[in-house]
Image (tube, rainbow, N blue to C red; front, side, top):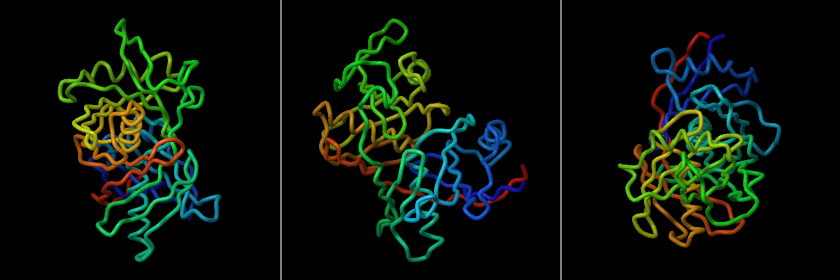
Length: 276
């Protein structure tokens, strides 16, 4: 089986897009995905977006998301932007697209400056739907991490997120705290972990330990989760610039049941094929 792929990046997040809309072949096995994610044996990626034919006639494609460790996950904001940018280049003139993903239908538009704005849907705070082991719905929770009580925000952006506010992202203990929180017993499906420093009401710094990947240069849903968390605590405005190690994203959220909008770049790095 020969796999044709597009390697792209969104704010530094390495995305591989595989278009199987015409053939609708099943994705590679977990072991094959791990080989493909390693840049010494494959194109190398943080997430792989596997495109298929949509079930919804309004959608341009369906997609599935796979992490570098071969696990399948529910959402990838940077990956969605890359898929939309690829579809826009293919169409030549169309700018707006609907995509059918595991977390539902996603709407996205290519802006005049080339960036892509994605409607990520409303955040989810119900612990059972994140999932997170808790009975209440507070703005933040105490979490015991190896004997240390940390105040964290927990929500879902189609996938689970835990947000920790820190004084400085450069000195945050991401290498140890990231895996410890990712696999914490209160997260039955594990979680992504964001370490956020609030600069002012319109700007934050963020580093993200992604579930099944480790720290990446950027995480779109992680940026959304961090802004939502800061907004719920009354510390951020409606539109926030998120600075990540790999680039910059803009997140806007009016609050309540309103959708979160994620805007950022999506760039083609290379195209190729690999024989599985």
